[in-house]
Amino acid sequence: MSFRTRIVVAKPGLDGHDRGAKVVARALRDAGMEVIYTGLHQTPEQIVEAAIQEDADAVGLSVLSGAHMTLFRRVIELLGERDAKDIVVFGGGIIPDADIPELERLGVAKIFTPGATTQSIVEWVREHVGQPVS
Image (cartoon, rainbow, N blue to C red; front, side):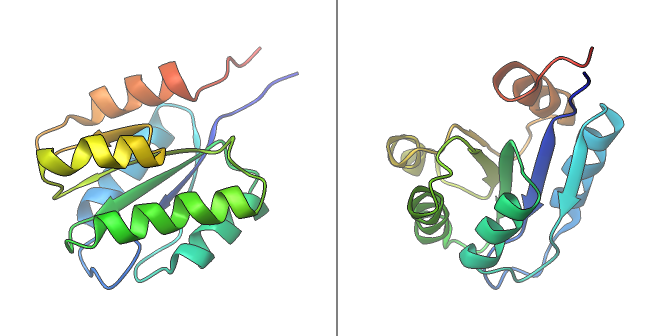
């Protein structure tokens, strides 16, 4: 039985810049993962619904707007309410180092800051989310 890791990549909130999210989505796809990119201006509710509908293993959030604390918190809360805490949440964007420990406390598995390579993201996802394909 083969199993491909399924990742929902999402841009929550009002942020209109998605180049980084698209680059990460392509890198994950090129690495053999199934990637669902939800597009711009998604609400946390839409993102969680997509993750559940797509039977995602993880959700990758890209936040550049400064609303990362609110948006990540809400996605984590909604996953809990939908009995989907097993979906790994990771993200990146313009997130101050000082906020990362609080995001991790909330349940965000990993934050990639500016300068993170797509290779490091792919490797992290493989190690912490990925399932072997047989």
